Image (tube, rainbow, N blue to C red; front, side):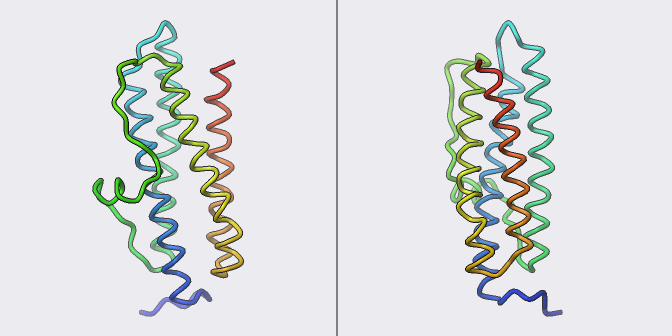
Length: 157
């Protein structure tokens, strides 16, 4: 059945492309946060171990929401690590240091990169592609990432 939700097909393709890039960033950020949760070594281990867990749980929810938004505009969400790594703007990294401050700084930078990307696409999706639903959706995601980044930065004071 043809999807008729008031978004031109060529616009929904562009929006789906933006969302699949976001999905890639979210997955890489999720994996990096899980890695921090598993491998952090610091005097504050228990507190940051639990903190990283709370953040990756939030990212799991975001990942599902992004994939479902892609499906709701009648496109397929990418689902392989190969595809995620091709589209993400974030870097995977091996680290020599597993201290909490190093992980926190790295994850904060990633959240800020996602926030900037979201902010740059809010009006573009609304004005150029006439998809107010997705524009509103990514505004909400931006706010979630802003809060997660704030929580990370609070550990650096």
